[in-house]
Length: 149
Image 1 (cartoon, rainbow, N blue to C red):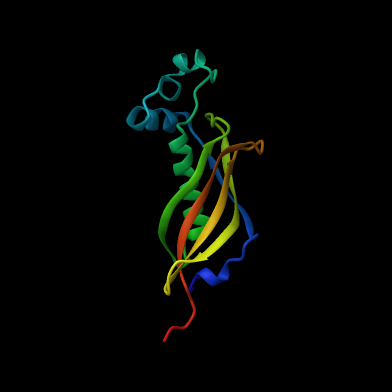
Image 2 (image 1 turned 90 degrees about the vertical axis):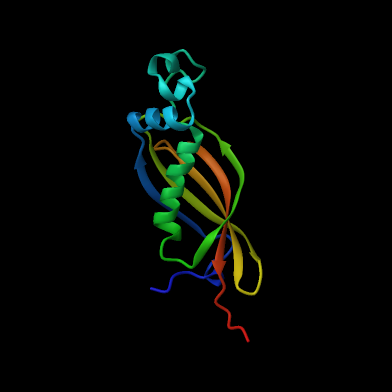
């Protein structure tokens, strides 16, 4: 399979995919290693926090989203890296047992140079209730198909 090139995307295209259940143990392990705040690492302390219980680090949520994006959107395409992320927001806490999925929409395309174009993808990571846990705009670089002389 050749995979999708820049020209294969259209503004307005949408997709929904993913099904990842977040485990308490991974929330705590990630929190202890990378984001050691009590509401990520200690169930008792988390109960007393503004969140009223253990929640995942936003960066863990983003990492789970990245995996879903790679497996379902990028893998097998002509993507060649990312220029970054715009407008990253944590909108709703992710708790142990939540099952996350993703919705994407192509919101902009821009020719970067003769060889590549940038596809801007609006991404929403949602829980099983449809609540948006995180949102962002991913800027993905894709090879262009057009013949060059």
